[in-house]
Every structure is written in C-alpha cells, then in structure tokens.
Image 1 (tube, rainbow, N blue to C red):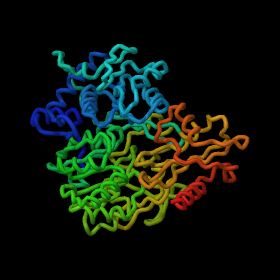
Image 2: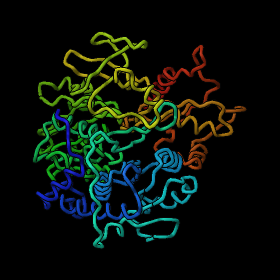
Image 3: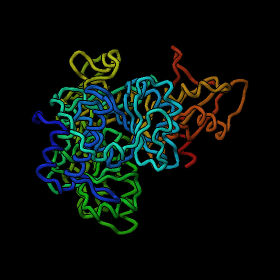
Image 4: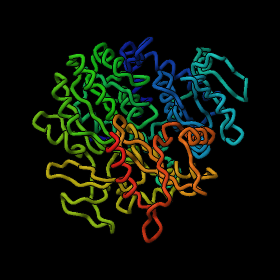
Length: 530
C-alpha cells in the first residue's frame, strides 16, 4: 500500500472545496453530514479552540456517541495539531478519572444528560483531581449550564460564526501522534495506545483494499466512534476514501434494517451479536437486504453456523471473521469469495499487509499449523503505549507486537485464534480487563479472594463471572454486590453477571489462580443450566 502524504484535515478541506454538497456521513435523523457543512463547522470550532489557548500537541478528549459533533472535533483537532482522545461514553468515574489524568487532557467534550446520565455532574466530581483539564465543553446540553461550574462551555456557542479568522493549518506530519485510545490491560491499568496519522490511515487502507471499497459503497457503522473501528472506519474512512459512512447512534436491529434499505448500505464492520440479530431478523421477516455485500465481524467468538446462515439468508452478502485490536487494527480482512465460505466460517480471516509470527513460550518460531502466541508487525501498528516500559514489554527488538492471543496460520494464509494468553474478557466486542474488576472487588470488606473469568453469553459471546472466597463464611447477594460496584464508579458493562462462592481457589505451585480450570468449570455450569 502507498504511504499517505495527506491527513484528515487535508482531505476534509479538499472535499469541502470540490464537492461541498456531497454526503460524507449519513445520519439516522436530521441533516446528513456533507463535506462542505462539516468542514465549515470544524473551522469555526478550530478558531474557538485556538482562541481558548489550545496549542499543537495538547490532548483533547471527547466522550460522545456517534454524533456529527465528533466528526467536527476530529477535523478541528487535526487542523490545529491537537491529539484526539476518544473515550467510550459508558465509562464512569473510575475509568474516566484515570484516562483524563493519564493523558493530561486539556479540553473535554461531553454530552449534557444522555440516556439518563448527567455527564457534567460527573466531571464536577472529578475536576478537583484533574489539574490539566482547563475546559469542559458540553454538547447538546439542554440545561444551558454555561459558567455553572468552572470553565464549562457550550459546543453550540463555539461553532457560531463570529467572523473570527481560522488559524493557519499545522504542517502535515504523518508520523506525528494523531490519536490516543485507552485499552484494557491485563494488569488492571488501561494502556494508552498511540497511533500516528500514517498508521491509522494504513489500517483504513487495508480495509479499503481487502473489501474493494469504492464510490457507491456505504459503510453502516453501529460501532462507537470512540472505538478503533468506529473512529477509523466510521469517521476517517469517509474522508480519505470514496466510501460513505452511515452512523447509528445505538444498535437496534429493526432500525438497522430500515436504515440499510434507506441509504443502500453495502457493508458493515462490527461485533458478532449485531450480525446474529440481523440474520435472525432477516430470516423471520423474509428480508434479503440486496444492497448489503459484506459483513465483517470480530472481537468475540463467531459461530461457523452464523457465517453460513448469513450467506443463506441475505441475497448478496458475504459474512466473515476479521482479526485485530486497538494496537494492531485489521490484521486480517476475511474471505469474500463464495468458494471461500469454509475459510470464512472456520478461520479468523486472511492476513493482509501484516507480517505474522507464531512463537512458543521462548519466542522461537513454530511451524505452520502449530499453536503459539501471535506476534504481528505492519504499517498500521501503533507507535507504542504512553509508558515506555509497557511498549518495551509488548514490542520486541524486531518490531513485532505480542498480541497475547494463541493461534496458528493455515496453508491458505488465514489466521485461526484458539486461545487467549491475556487475562481479557471480550464482551460484545469490547475488551474488559479481569484484573481491573478483581482490584475493585478486593476493596469489599467481606471478600477475601476474587477471580474474574469469562463465561459463555448467548448474545455477547462472553460475559463476566466473579468467583469469590468470602471472609468468615459470609454470603453476598447479587443485589449487594451491584450496590457496592455502583459506589465504586465501575462502568456497568464490567459488572459480573454471575457470582460463584467457593471455599478456596485452586492455584498453581507458584500461587497463581488456575483460571483455565475456573473458566472450564463456569462454562460447564452455564451450559448445563442452559
């Protein structure tokens, strides 16, 4: 693939000038995002942010749904040379406080009250411990609380046209840090994944090449723009390629079907449960969805029957698995030809533009077909983590990143994931650190030991199970546990959905909990109950 010499702001400016009325991103309600309108909005925002004193290299965070404002923020940030830090909207005090402090965020964009949750109220609680946070900007805040607490501003005021001159665009440096995304770590501390303009563009180009994206393609995007998939293939792809995007604010299969038909969506990259519900809906209502030509899913286990079912139900759609992570996006691009159905259903996709090694515990390369840890190196690999030590532990001297996944490579050049080395739970496509939940559980006075493991989940692939040893033979109900977790500020998607009480946890000779045994035991319990 060719190296890019233009960044997002370059392409946004170019398309705003050449095709101002053309749609870049479809929206479910309201006016669609055109190249001209969004660039104008982004430049007004850039002028306001510059006037506030934000300078190249400063970090700005946004904790927003799939709204048009996220697109304008991204473009304005690139124009000014700011580093963007997308934060998942479902994160609460526990996660957000760490991310904002660790990134040294200078400016934060948040909703007002969204889905019943008051975001400004949360920031008011956290702000005394965030000395770097100079500005909080609310988006679509009906309360109009400007000046209510510190430097709280309104997005709508910042993008009003006041005749202010737009600052000169920062020089395009494709190797500069463009985005910082936080991913769950096995140690319990989220890791700051840093991508450059170039590495992010190469990840997008890999999909454009692998899926033959062109003018006329429309990418349905229900994944959050605060995830690597939604950010890259949702926001940026619409500007650096000829493919349009169709934002969904939240997944609803009935709305998705109507939306696909209305905008003529041709593809989707998202979590396995979404494909599962779409197939069930199409079969139930005799829908062929003829415009849809591919659905790439990953981030959770994909039953082979789901792939074959999709091919039977949809008129023209090829479904397949893909493999990647925030650090190394889109390592594989799937199999799209009809004669490759078996590979699409039984492997995690065709490796494309990545070097992949399979190694044993000593780091020695294994023969084709043998299972070992997956190491990857490629043009879309992250620059590194925020902490140098974390980077050294993850990337070896040859530039290969240790994914923490176990698998092998087939003769067809496909990757197959068979196990997980990292202590991570993948719930609905989102990585959750078991260690982070354990650390929170250990704060409970009556919990002596806690081990958190993945368990089968019919819709999300994996759920969270906590295996607990209580002090003094105490008991703990699910309601009591949830009340405790609510107080800690841990995001709800990380709360255990099942609790098992044990007298002791089986351990290795070195004292490590045998999580492999626990996973098998919990899996057997869940399956027997089902």
